[in-house]
Amino acid sequence: MKSLRVQSALGLLLRPCASTPISSQVAFQGLRALSTTSPHQAKTNQKAPKIPKPTPFVPDVETFLTLIGRDLKSHASKFPSWESLFSLNTDQLRELGLEPPRSRRYLLRWRDKFRQGKYGPGGDLKYVENGTAILKVREIVKSPLAKLRQVVNVPVGKEVDEVKPEEMIRPLGFKVQGIRTIVGPYALPMKEGGARITVTEGMWEDRRGHKVDGGERRQAEVRFKRKVAERKALREAQGFY
Image (cartoon, rainbow, N blue to C red; front, side, top):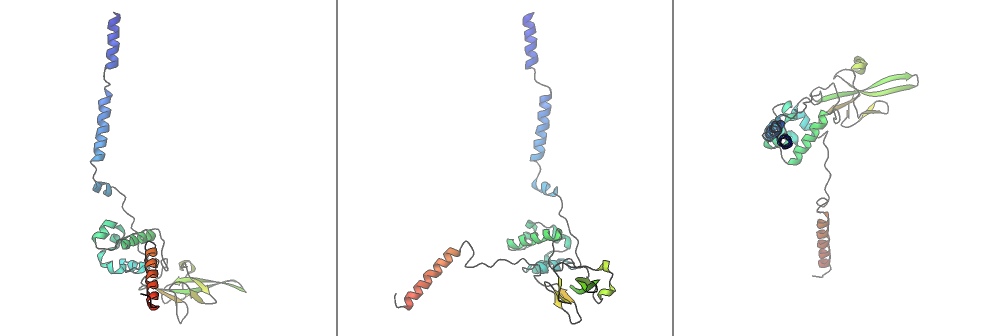
């Protein structure tokens, strides 16, 4: 009797768990699903990039590429729409023929800045006509002896007193110097007062550093060879060969 009890107990211990194959099968199916996901499917599952809205100062592709400079406006015809400009990835830009790679990186960097509302001079202007905006000086009387002067953007052909205060735009980067002189990047004074700012090639361009003697990696080699040549020329001039 005792031996029968021992045998039945051992049978229970050695009996395989019924849930083990099911859990293993589920885990296997999950791993299989992950392994069969193609890179293309992974890319399509990613969140689509945000397409910012054009602004009055930057209404189209050509203007954007003109402002950021580095001769990128020559590639304007490769972008059929504003949406394509802000949605194509680096591989697609390369297929379009946008070379060299640093130009693609530069364009991608400026796209991200524009999405974040980080514009260059004039990017926050509201009243723009044919790529030109007018800036005027607005005077606010604080007291008989004190006046506050502000630079405001007004519609073309209108004066400050013809525009409601809440409709005026105070652009960043511009200020009043003296009594009525407007100073700021690319602000050109007008005879009738105020200033004009016009879309110009490279207005927003991030200037590249100037490489001296071939850049950091080649400076030592270039300067060494130059000194050798200078010493050789000096010896020849002194009659030593």
